Length: 269
Figure 1: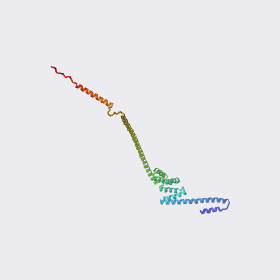
Figure 2: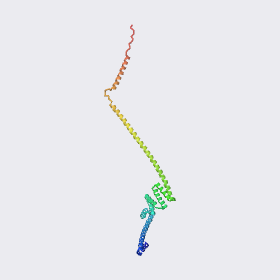
Figure 3: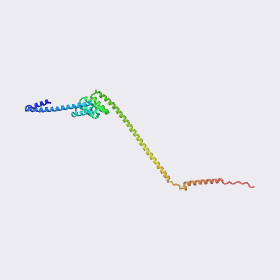
Figure 4: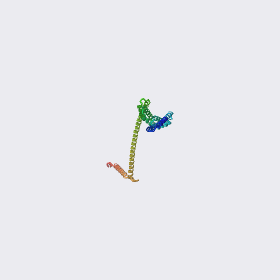
């Protein structure tokens, strides 16, 4: 830094004139470049310090402090892919899977080499695995293997995720089957209940009809003329008259049978 300042002083102290004006122009440009490089160098150094501190805390499993340092480093250099990758790993260790996945997706989009893309997608797959999102995990591990076909861990995890996905699909199929059966049973039950209600209404209506009929019969019977005590009804009088006539006929028949037959008298000698 001191060497750049000395050069700048030498350029500015040259004789006046056109040459002097030109020297001043380049001196100013050089000074601005020195300031920029110095500031950038200081910022780059501070970013690395924060990243190294974050790595130290990460190794100590102090993930909260590691996250803080990585976040500070990225505030200085948002495009630092190492900081992004390490922050994503830290969030994963804190079981903040959705946040970790977003950081890893950003990392995969920024890095250029296939190895880094594969590593980011592998961690994305792990975050889905931790949440038992098997289909998403399968897709992430496949993406990993597209960038790094030799990744043995990705192959193993892909196989495991595919197996778990099959089980999940079978369970969902069985669950849907059971649900459909329950729905059918409920419909049959509702239908039977409705039939019972309809039959009950029919029975109630029939019972009411019988009651009304009995009531009408009782009312009709009540409306029929009742014989007064000690007085024969017309029907009873007819029956009594017929009985008397029969008795009279019997008496007359008897009298005919008992009528004397003339006795033949002996001759009077």
